[in-house]
Image (tube, rainbow, N blue to C red; front, side):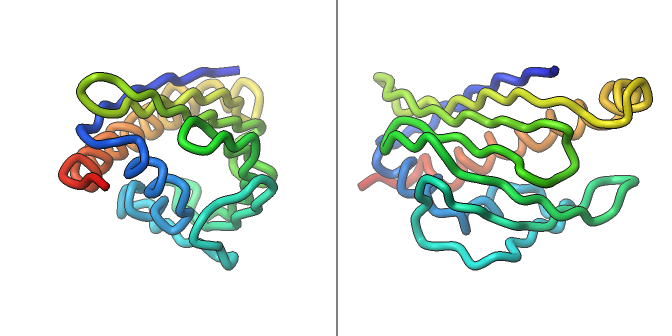
Length: 153
């Protein structure tokens, strides 16, 4: 199992951040363009426990892959989980947490995942997967700043 923990501070209120992250369509806005992210299934304006979202992403060297995720354990204005049901990882559990702090909102991502393909997967993780995930979460941090820091309710 591998773990990632990222924190992003945005200068806005928690209601603004929650409104943004609870709308599944906004995932496209925080995903790098080169991943050709596309939501395939119909999605509501606001997520709910048990929501299944099917989308497609482009993974370098592997091409386009479908991913089915389930949204669960929602605590409004505080946290939720997206867990892969079908996708490129052997296991993917992403806990999203919001913390109100004096200068805004801390967006915290806790990801636990494992990769397929045994020893080859471990090699690919070090060479490709971990750097790609680092790039994706760095991009997300920039986009959260850009999209949310200038707005408040």
